[in-house]
Image (cartoon, rainbow, N blue to C red; front, side):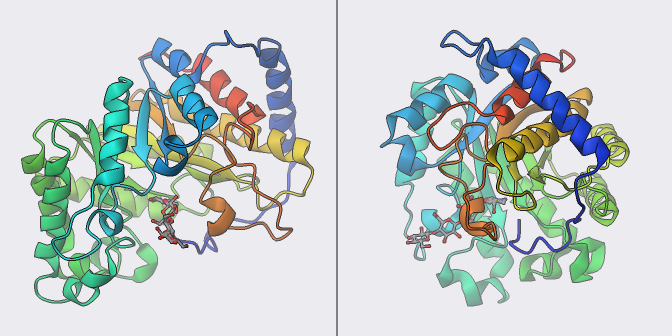
Length: 371
Ligand code: G3I
């Protein structure tokens, strides 16, 4: 995900959003009466439907802040490290590996019987500084492939599912097959991306292998939907061992959800024989005013509207949020509000109390068709 969000739509609140928000507030009022320690967790609600609820974790708070750890353990059946498995931290200098934090997270998952997602082996945005010139040289593709193989091999048998390749599609770059203008892709094309999947398969024969990307649910994203579908089709036809498509789901409250196009998109991905997981759900409130109650209500309504459509697709296997609490979100720095207030973008507030967004996820899970 890039920090330039200019391609996302700007719209003021309309009648439909207002009604959805009012509905979500009502649902919240209904569910929150049961807000007590015994309240059914998101994890249990998902399991009841044959889905998996998970969250992204960051080693810092995970190993130093008990309420954060408790929140993760209460609600999540799956975790994914926010940054700890990326190339920059795991190989800060050539042939010098540092898996300390990633290994700690993997052990935490094992010790608590949590499923572990790996994020991410191949991503244009995270190569360490020492690779800068090498990547655009003749050896660039080999460097990326070796990295993917070594990383995935290190965690062989411990990671259930890998984002093998992340964010390779950028129609605005004007490259063949809508690939991003990044040297390994512009030189190797989709065949290179297929090679990444083969390398991942060799490195861990049992992991589920995903392609992960963003922005396929709003009104003005037809081009991205088409580009990603065409790309997945070609990748499969080249025999790449891909098993799933991860939809990041960095939503924006007040953006115009295209329910019809999104339903169709999901079913077309499913027709390719791929599983689908929402992998990085959060909801930016940058387009909303400062009122906390209204922000929380609209964020919850947007979440519910999105998840209801997502869960209707039988190929969807679960949902991962990009964090559990507003205390830790990339959005605070990645996309700050103009009024400098902190965003209210995740299921729990800064003090780990459940917000309407938590109840919106609970409600969507409760109403999801069983798998
Ligand atoms: O580790 C350095 C630290 O040494 C230094 O002091 C500090 C100063 O700013 O920076 C630290 O690195 C930061 C890193 O997160 C770890 O905190 C980077 O500046 C910062 O850019 C990086 O941001 C992460 C971003 O990916 C880029 O890797 C965000 O935390 C993370 O939430 C975000 O996650 C991405 C997904 O991987 C892919 N999809 C989009 C999503 C949001 O952008």
